[in-house]
Length: 346
Image 1 (cartoon, rainbow, N blue to C red):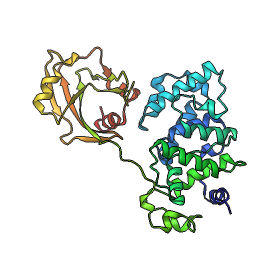
Image 2: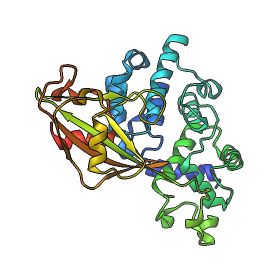
Image 3: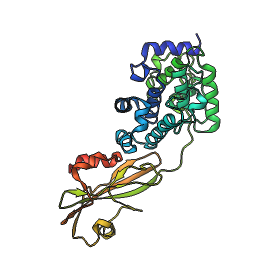
């Protein structure tokens, strides 16, 4: 029995009933694939439901305000995905008259779409014979075939893409691609894979040589940097606060936050007290300063760790231009800020 047939047989018996598997609509497949980038199914499922409910067509997504899209995405992280999703929806509506591109070569031109996502959409929605290669595929193929080429290199991508393309079932490319992704996610897991139930346990090189934990190989990335964030939470006499939109590039681009003082190390009370006097609404104001969390909240991102403290500034005056406490939750914010807002209970 060949690889594709074994894999598809396993998938037929073990696949999960997920909403994006009950459609070939490219808009829905695209939504699911973008949401599931860097995200597990259990976390992404509610977001998929929310997006398909609020924006049932690409026209609805294109016509939405960016702030509305970012708010719906809040908590999912990697916010560039949401911005790219919105930009591509506008492109499809404005430039393609709402017709989703139907080939790999055209799909990959969409902002935020790479080889994997384009292959998934092209195969699932349009039956194009183009193999997907993601983390699940790297892991499964490297173990089954004993491949030590680092997966985060150009050479590694080409080698695994070529192998996946050779293995794909040309008559059932959609099923094959979904099967190998499901196989990697549920059976050939990063830790504690279920080798006893694996249909390839008689031929898996990693299992035979007891090197499962060594594969796939990945070159270590640069050292994670540390940043120290001090958010200034202003509470005015008339029940208002200050939030600001992050402009320019960056992970939280166009999201909202409290005024931020970034320091090169853990900041002292005196240094923060001195610096907050430079914040526009606080100049020449009588204020009371307190620290909300003595121990920094560590927010871990792929390339940096944010050591975060929230400083509470109480004003004995009004903030005419401020944001009312009950309006704060209307703004899209990073999950770090969102969690604070929920706990602080303005």
